[in-house]
Length: 108
Image 1 (cartoon, rainbow, N blue to C red):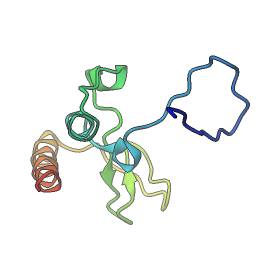
Image 2 (image 1 turned 45 degrees about the horizontal axis):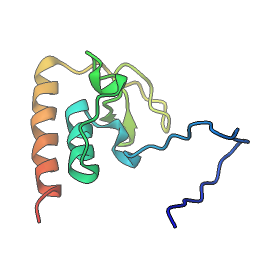
Image 3 (image 1 turned 60 degrees about the horizontal axis):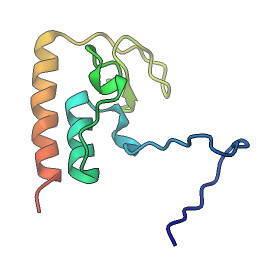
């Protein structure tokens, strides 16, 4: 019938826009990988402000202490260990590895 039931945490006014995340646990990946995920799964090329941002502010790394996801320059939410800013070489190698892993996920 073309209807969808949505549960919200607060009252929603009639006509108010409701937004959802298409990314789920993929939200902390690099811009390139997030956009590839959206294109592969939902068939659209995302051009939101985050995907067009010059800096990849939401790409997280594994915490060196507990392996949870943490943003560079921040402290881990789980163990409070600081996450140092990665070197340029590290970023290049990490991107290459993420791309390789993503290619395995898209294979049939």
